[in-house]
Image 1 (tube, helix red, strand yellow):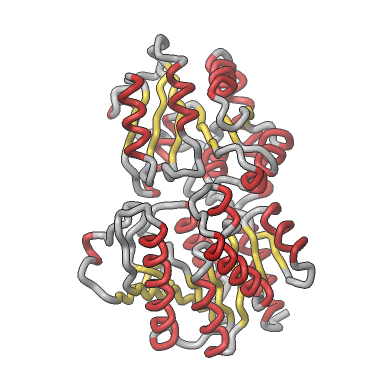
Image 2: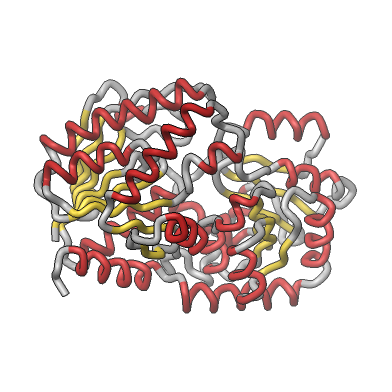
Length: 410
């Protein structure tokens, strides 16, 4: 089976889509597939081409048996919709020619969305190569952009919605990261074949017994400090102000510390807010490599995982949940809907707080702080739940069967 993976995001970039797609590709390769990846020159999340790739138009690489073709992309440090569209469509253009002239033959094309517009390239390559198209939806776009207020132009939203509907109807399989995404698509398009392709975790990498490698000591924290971790993109959707507002309630407790690791469009705003409020017990760290994350998670007592309180996010499952629980750390979850049902109500892997409610978050922090036995029990529950239901090996096996059926190999 020859698979062409089309995605704007891929390692060495750091982030949930990058890790998820890489891990899936490696597992499909191990099952006998020939994997070719067409992706952009690394630039995320700083929106700046990585130094080792600057000045290049295209690069061919090999990564763990995967053939990687990287093509040029326009990037600019700007939050304007015009700049974002130029970024998206520049890669639509260059990935199309890379896919035709360098990627070779394909039986299946897996196209990652967002960005939704990459579906244009996926559809044309499908036609040219005579391949089956799998459209993998990790975020319902343009709905999410509209609900977050990132896009307000009605004409643009209408065009994007038409493209979204076109891609669903012209794909042999539409996969979704959450059950909510799959239900949304299946309800609107009952004739479209769908598959739930959940995120997961590599238990050989995120090991529950992993030591913190002295991370606390290196960063001037003692074993007495109670560390609350947020690690990920510092973006609009996360509503990270809730962490800083909750932290303000603990300014007199020297032992409770808030660790925020990552980069993104809201970072400068959040650091400014920290300085204005005088929150010396909130510590910001730049993004780190995947290899460094287990030690940081191991050093934390619990993780805070928030999203804004929008109907849209009731179908969201932040990927950082899986790594945290794999290391037996409980979560403070500010996400309603599917994530809460799975990881709080079913798994008993943490405590839920009302999204964007810093008072409720502060109460739940105190509940964990006052009971280390509760922390241990919740962490054990979460580990067992993700071990049984969300290993990357199991996810890849089920997806592999779907791909085999598409090309008649079963």
